[in-house]
Length: 135
Image (cartoon, rainbow, N blue to C red; front, side, top):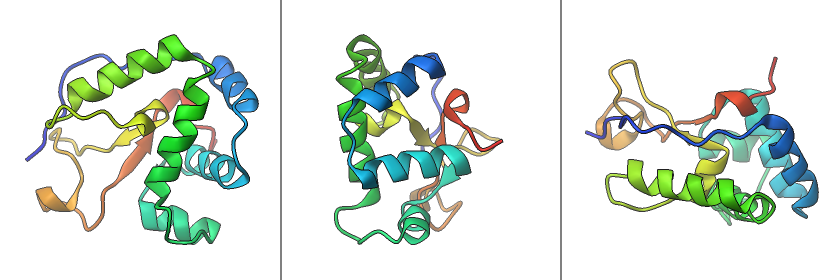
């Protein structure tokens, strides 16, 4: 089972993040995905695809990653920190650029919510709390 690790996630002021989004030259799909997940807070890949009526290819998580790379060019120091953090929390030492805006969700015991852990049917992700705008 994959447990949450105790390492501080780099946090960026939402105003700076919004500025980076505005200047990142995102596609309409990338922007729609980011706006949607920031509004709903938690999501699965199929839930976003269904809600936004997206084609199955490329996968939503790939689109999130590509959008985060574009945003990351506007906030390079923060993005570098997020990539290092992402790699450090991964059990396989692999970074996911989508960690700029969201991360896998964990239950109260600190266990990642994913099919491999037998606690949900799909990988569940959560938007970072400072970027949530669904209220």
